Image (cartoon, rainbow, N blue to C red; front, top):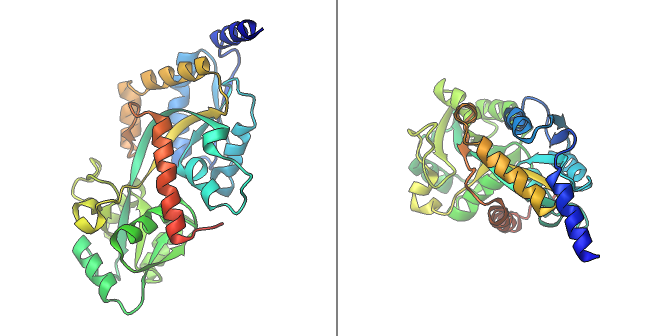
Length: 312
């Protein structure tokens, strides 16, 4: 009976895919996750021989989309283009303990790439370097304020990682998106913000904000003039970014997982696609093993969540 079941599963996987694939995105059309999904969908379709249709299910920082895929039939026809919030953070900050668990309810298939974040200062903040940031936060009579895109988001956790690693005094002010962060910086309601580098660069170039440092261990090829925070010993453990990965439901058959992983890795070697994604600010990650990477990211997020006592 066991041999028959295995042979049946092997035949099932060999026929994969036998219908259109839905690639679920937990954010509205036009956002960074959506742009990556729509960039890879045509190539996946070409390599797998079936249509790959992007479906946007925005809401609750991607949790609705993650749940949709987790509850889908594990046949490889419903996939998630995930990012840190829905895949690595939400279950850690949720007050519920019976919800989505990414290590049990999903199957990591492959990483696409990552975008660095950057700590910026507003025009009214007398800070334009890492040393000045450390001096200002140390001398301020009250904690200086930094904005992120919302409570429990990757940008919030990056800000708390900065605080945790360096010991600087900062208070978090959640905002609703990059537009609100920029408005708060411009008005002086906040002193600093953590932003996605690709979103911040136009505002850095036109002088609306001042770049202090990227939140990675090394400088970004997209803006090599901006130092990495980790170049200063106070920030040596700061390594935060937004990554994008392909996942399926939990218990996805290994043969289907392998087919998808190999197809994605081959696709990400195509020069035109790489050019498109790199132009959007991504550093390619197709050679990184998603499973241990995700496990390490969740452990890192857990330490920051516990340090800052973040709960939604």
